[in-house]
Image (cartoon, rainbow, N blue to C red; front, side):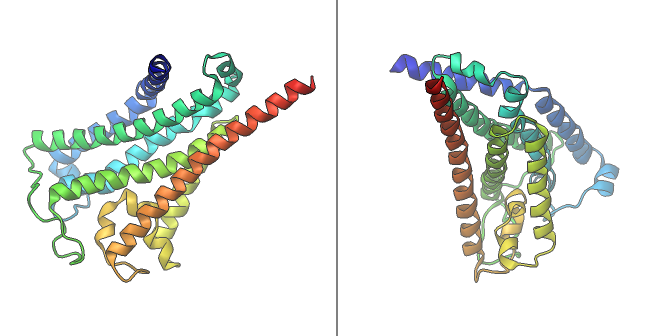
Length: 278
């Protein structure tokens, strides 16, 4: 059992390393580092391109700009996770492995989730490092958005952790949808388009709150966590809106991942029936 567990962990690590070493990861992070250096070290660049939130550059970066870069990196890595195997004719190769396709699919999904968490943590740490290098204080003990909403009061340090958790949840929700489509498609462009469509639809609902609950329970509330401190449109308190948002996206993510596994089980059953008939 321990050998089996160890081999499965090695499989997850192999998939995770492939995601981390992907050239898109390096490209997106490099562009973000250059952009962040411009923000922190060039006052003219900052005045031209930046909208500063709460007078805090770190809060601004992790709420307005970092999530976009993370979304791009996660989407470019999650879209081909299964579709590329099908397009290259490599999907059936997994059946020859000791654990079969189901374990490999599970390893890919878990690796993608770990990748999302790691790249988000990297983005936060890189931003903090550049902030400290520029001698811009993080002000961990100061109150975040002190006058924005009396329902929620937290220090900057707590708010940064809150932002990290919300951004991870938002990205995992997107990943769950993209991975599901990737598992059922043989062309990378389909899951890519799905991720972009999700982003576009949620952005429209965020910018044009025609239905109040679709503004409160919205992907951009997670990718821009500072908006969760604003007054709710649908719920009678900010805390209720926050709770509803978190629960909704957790349930959606779990359901989509379960559908991905169901697709794998269905494919295996069909293949078994076809082999019996022959």
